[in-house]
Image 1 (cartoon, rainbow, N blue to C red):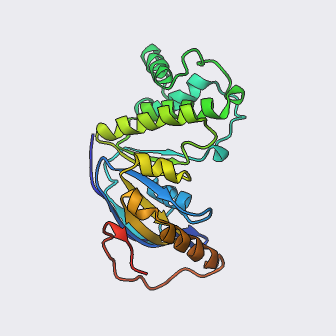
Image 2: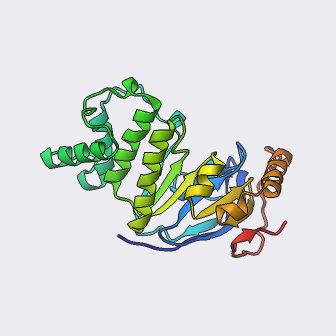
Length: 257
């Protein structure tokens, strides 16, 4: 597995030239477990899409992903569960790098899918249609697909949304296992206590970086209030910044205002 440090350098991301994430400078070491926290609309999902290669930067760049397998888990609301496919076929999509778009799945592939489903507690769900699953069951199936993708960098957008406490605990255990295996896990979260208890680093984001470092230091009341204030003051119709600021390596702790 290829492991590299990730660098976000003066990164600005947005839509139709309107920035959603401003001039972000960040260094993420291999095997990090990172929580991205911020108000609704703060650019968290946009940042993950940029790192997943789904959104081209308006400015700056992302370094360190070349040669690495990257897996992206979107929000549940972005996944069409009405598509006529069963659980095992959806999970099997995690093998597309091996099989290819026109390849056929053999018995060995099917067995690997069943093993992945067993790992997330979905033994016997192989032939269930997706639209019959609960939110928690569907999220477990998506985690089974992640297992088969065998990625070194995992980008997870609200991976614990619509799941109960037990499922959250089991999926969180899987994230820690991936970290011990040397994988980098970056997850958008809304649960501050979950971030404080389980993650090594937190990025507090409000269109721009507010703080980066250990969650207990980053997720302080004053910094959370600053994030809310900056987000509320942001102009969604503002033009993109044309002049990049000098790149600054973000260190642990509070970023300068």
